[in-house]
Image 1 (tube, rainbow, N blue to C red):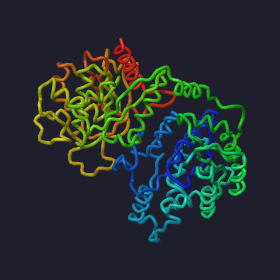
Image 2: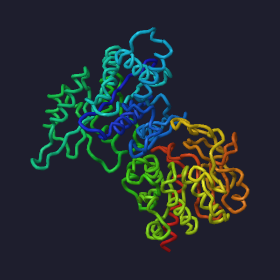
Image 3: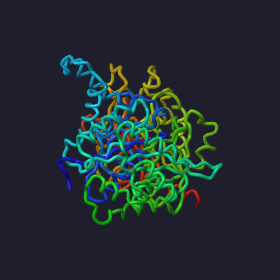
Length: 542
């Protein structure tokens, strides 16, 4: 069914950040989809940056890119992986975007000379953004995750906007899911509910009563704890959910369904709840993740390895690809800044696959190039993404074509062999935010190539986030020496994919395939790469 006027579910958090609002939002969406409802999710981020595109990954984790080229919060990756529904610019809103829009309107005189205030001008813009997805008239339910924690100064305008929306839309058309923490005090052996009580109190002080509480805990909640929380927080006992650590995040929808979260929510927003959701394929996937037949070791070489969230989509793509191959992919994070030829054998020698990760800037670049050389010379399956692909081109130019100082002009403007160069349309661009080649572009795949065999298709669309490109002036030399440009943008003739002839599996992509891998549709390149790593591992043991 699809409604002209969708229902709205708001997911808030309290006590501490990083409790898993994004996973709970995605899990709820998965359950509602399994019941036949059309759903989308959006994220409201309280930071003043316009988007995370200029943020260091150590600040905010991975910057996720949508089909239409928006640089967004990494939670949108969770949304897509859980739902298999593409998000867009409308699915991520920041305080920076809100204020930018309001200030632009003020400069144009659209407020007719009135003084601009947080209420109603900022809150009106927030409400407009929240309801923007409803214009498509294809969603039964719109889930809105509010970043940060209740009580933060930054979150107050969003909380107030939700309060106003609940009043105008009606309480049968909206619901609030509040995620909070029940800490365990090991000294007394008790689960403590007081932080949750204070968090809900802060929400109530801002005019919002939660309908459902999801309690993050490291110990199972007793019936007594649930009753106490329900009593002190004014919610039904059946609306108190336990969120405990599980072996894989993909088990969370199943745990939430066991506690009837989907039924409770549908009751709150006055939608029919008939029969059981279709979770068969999801259950099968989780079973494969939890019960692999073997393990394969893959090195992830990058410069943000201390924070795995910097490569969140890549990590999750390996989970999907591992399940597709009935194996567990054990990732070893290798800091490219510390990787040198002298000790590379001890680091990469036990690996059955090497992935060189994307990134920007010269820091750690030589370590990445060394990893590429090791994979090429030792026949280890290699996957290079964006800068990883560019490193494979630089390495090949230096060590096979004989251009000793070959480089990217991003790293060395004075190189005599700029095999990677700035895109023509990027020359003269000085602003950093939102100015790269972003979003989905077509790619024509060469017949007979491994990449085309993996996709099973001649034309694919993949997402990009970069400024520098393969320099086509060197295309013939690379191709003649064996590093073939096997993926070309049909509109611009830009090289999208390179593949090494005679190697078991050596592929570099200018685009980011990890952005399109989902639970129910693992990305074909990751699945093929993992399969090649398994074969390499088996051959090594013979």
